Image 1 (cartoon, rainbow, N blue to C red):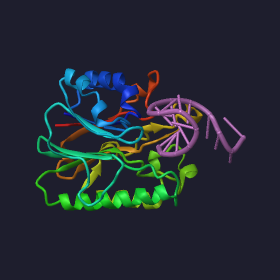
Image 2: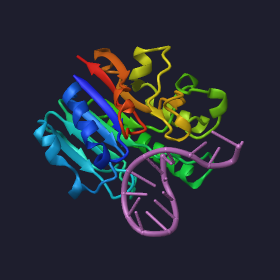
Image 3: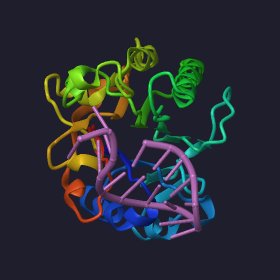
Length: 254
DNA sequence: ATGGTGGTGCGACCA
């Protein structure tokens, strides 16, 4: 089964790209970020026609996440228990005995800014939320736009990005605290040396020059990491007309 | 060269 994550940067603009990608790849679970659409406008009918269930936690203009699944989810949750957040960045649900977390982690703007402090607070809250769920019977898969490049091999020019937003030590430490003894970065686990990005800035012709970072991640519970067969990033949609600035990342699990 | 492009929505913000 395919588990995938994609920051679409507006579901309204990207709906045909997403529908085509689903038809081609037939994911079991697809987490979308930056839908930028309120729930009542979400195109549930498009996914229904494809044979999928869809769950939206959206808002106008900014943020917004959704889970698209080929079987119904149980226990869908739209917020963390211990962190009140007006920004719609969180949705979870149980899929065939696995707790799927789809997350749009704050960008953080620049190191030291108010938005950076919000990002670190959000990551701490996520850590606490995950720690609570450790007692649960369900293994976890966390997918989404983490807005953190885990290591220098995930960055086109590590010297240029050193201590910058998406790469700072505090962000990486927060991510490691979340994964420690619990989760594997599936792409890196299965591709120890590969340099492959998931996001390229629209500005400065980032994609054409392959100036990118790997910030879209699928973190898999150590209890089921052995079921992961492969992990990859599909650049095909990034080459289309009017693409998202992110490519879909996915894992194949037995 | 210290910006650039793109989405939302129509000005200014976010990334």
